[in-house]
Image (tube, rainbow, N blue to C red; front, side):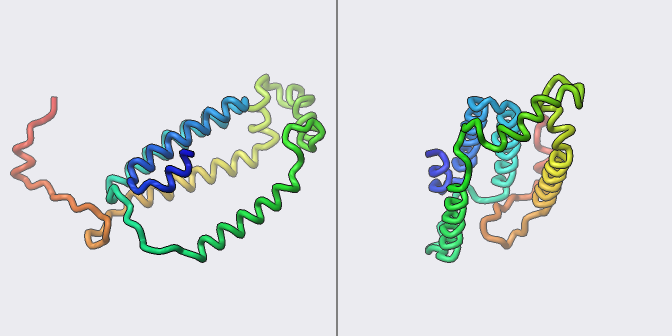
Length: 184
């Protein structure tokens, strides 16, 4: 319901707030599923950092989205075909929660049996992320670093005044700057 509202609303500030609510609801869902590390990451990155970045971008853009006046049929076709392929692929997944699934019988049992002896770390999640899946964790760190650099690069570009949707700001004259009272 919240995701549909994010897509439907034309007020970009309201969309940013709804997106933050969606992220918090997702974090709550991960908490219920006993995935505390994922819940903390979703709350911090999804609801916190992403919302701050979107609000920072909204200071440079107009608040309301203007409709384009038509439909992009090619984009709709791509989304429908991709959704159909994902639905077809999902039919081949093993039954959710089945104790005979490969993840429960092969890798998971090895981690539970050998993590304490192999790593000497009492926290099994930290041991798995830092040792068995260290290359994957390093790759995720690189992706987050690249995303942070991209966001920094996008936010550091000064907007052009001639572009539609860019809010013009009056420069502060020396007289107005000297008349301003310093805040306590």
